[in-house]
Image (tube, rainbow, N blue to C red):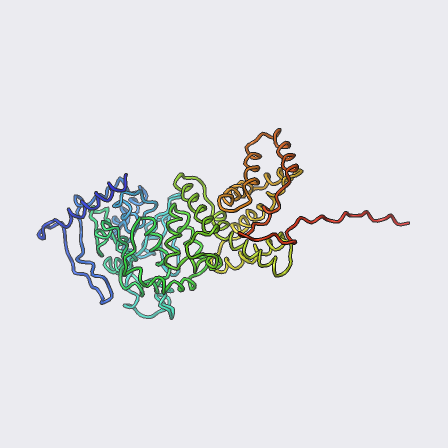
Length: 492
């Protein structure tokens, strides 16, 4: 469905709702409770089946099973959040979340295929093979209960450490992050419930935070990342009120566990909108908190070769996601941190007098160790990152069996693609990248001839050490001839 058609349908849908007469029994209103710092969301709306475009055909069969069983068990249950939002936008939801007044223990009693997870937020996962339906109990306001640290707890900065406080559907809507995510669909009577003006914000393409932005960001700083991610994914604008505190509070991301930030970065960069997300992260000062080593290399106009390299990498990743091709976090992190490794290797080479190869390998260790302390990239991915980077050095060796052995490496294809990506922005790699393209595509019988041509032409040593613009090669980067080994004399 074309974007303009979607916008038109949403606008007509909102006009239809707003044009209903006040006496229409299908629309019930209830005055919400707002604090002085909250945006006025207007009255609650309950839309009947003929007033909204959501159909059960657009909801997964497993999600409907969960809704029906909860209703049959005597509980209220609603499809909520991104599933409802995406259907209204004409998109296909990737997952379906459910909110209910049943507690996690009551949910588990109804479903034999249920497992309870989480300490900070207690959730129920209903497992249907590879499909997992997440069910959450209606959240209440944590300040309305006792201060038991087993139920609710906050840090000195206002971040919620534990929040297993249950409430009503109205309180649950107030506790959600954005208005467009506070939409509830009931499969029992096919009604759609809008508590915070989310339908209007969808029509206006506006991302609006519920409640006081500073307080909500302090409760969970990851909400700042979610704001940027949704703005890029849904092609929306973050409202000025919701955007205002982000730069000032960006440093709160340092308090988020490194393992959680790894999961968030996958959502940011590997969902098909990585480039747009990256630009927004930079604009709001959030990328600098996630990748401080990379941020030191940024230029005022954002047009340095390394910054262009990141944009090319994210563009290619977005294309692969849209084409349903495989993407890996290892290639993403290799691209994001490549400039930091090169820069650190040059410093080590100049300061310590190490050969380029040794400085480069030492820089790999330092950069990855520093990054993992902020974002806990699992070792299986950092190992692949090291291989991709190390192969950049091996690909410069084209004599003898070096090319064949390089091609046998499990990460050769990723390293080869990485070399082609570097060739778009780095100088001095054209001949090497072109030779490898011919070598990979040629028959085994032709490859020896390509190797002889490379030997006669001479491998370009500058490809082994990336150079900054205007930088001269130091004596440490020259190929050094190893002394010949002498066989020990036989003992007389």
